[in-house]
Image 1 (spheres, rainbow, N blue to C red):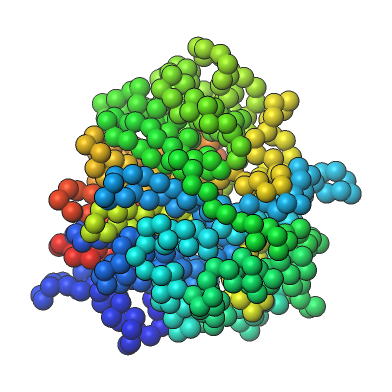
Image 2: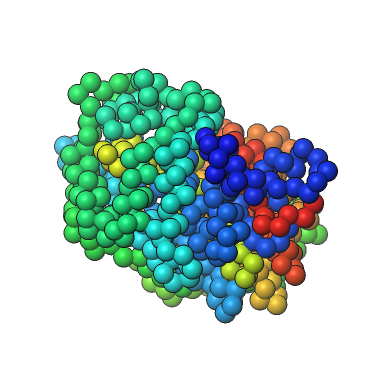
Length: 598
Ligand code: GLU
């Protein structure tokens, strides 16, 4: 959580709009926190300033799309290692008037020069180490975030994109307080950031990560936002910003006297002006699956999120989890994701044909996969993917890779007209490819490392190999759930690399099946089984549920401190909303509603 510097001026107004409380209310309600209940619109993000900016837009009559764009632009300032205009994302929209769910695929795309061998070292024929590929020009896809904002603002917004960038530009100019999470993210990246003049000038002031409590300003980013506001997105895709992005990729701004030890050569990439000029968002139909009378809408390819969450839900729906003992319910939860990850790894990539996606998310397929789950015994992992041409429980070949990131960010916004935005945006790793575009104040993505560097599926085709103009497979899973009357029930999403899929699923199961309120479902300890030998879990999950699951034959990988950093809004009827962010993970998030009800 971070607060803008100028607490005595505009930011106070903005923040006070979050925290405005009736006379006599307790001090507790003055702190913007992770849960807010009320009506008139709501915002949940990982960051207090971004939430305040989004709420301010709603209070001034903007709609959910306007507020989401303004909040996302602010996250580009205060959460620059997770998201920003150097990256991409997926935007899911529910239209309060028509009831239609639509999506924007603003995923970064590979340059025209990309080939299946882009991440293979020509000298020894082996895939590059991840860090070598990440901190290079090779990993940079054409950013899609600015085009996403433009498309969303045009299609559904009520404000100009320029006006929505202004609050974020002001935050970048004024600066914000560095907190422990921010400092740690820089410290974790110190060696990579130390290789580039532009990055260390901004994020390693005086040669070290900024101290907690110091003010960080980013006037270059303020100017970049203002340039886009003034000249339109053409300045980014066809104008001076495009030229600077291409220059950075093709000639990384390596320092003469790098600080920190970096073991790899820093390779240039093949992104060209024509890649930026030709970039277009896509509008894929959302994935759709039924779950216990609810309808779950998610993101289709190039994200695997919608189909992977949908397949696991279909498998789980075959058992009434609410009637099962907790160990059995969790056993089924981890088994369902092992199966759905096996299928995702084998079949899902940017170009998976629609009939295959439809089959993976069908009840018929779920019955073919669910029959492999033994209530008394964990399956041996990795489980093979299912055979699309077979019926019954016929297995196919091999398992897939493990991916887990801690980067990326998610936000959820709803307005008084019933519109909802669920938006996950990213620059891939925390700190992206570590290169700040000189003079522009934003980091480039390393999204292309989401491709498999080399085939992972044995003799079977790998759906996620690199290719020209191809978008790498994502796990991002912005999700909107409607109730049995077709009215909004829940919107949620999270960062976390491939663990996004399991975290979204776990929050859904917690809320829908396991009797938790939304804030409880968000706070509950998490575990992720992605078809690997051991379950990855937070310590509290392992401690509480480990013995029961181990008795069924499950094993655990070493614990991870935290999984995800989710945001969500639940719709309680008659315009009521519960906005929910993380109480603790990643420093805690901030939820706010326009008219609080205490
Ligand atoms: N690049 C990842 C994806 O698209 C997201 C990274 C993260 O959440 O850490 O799935």
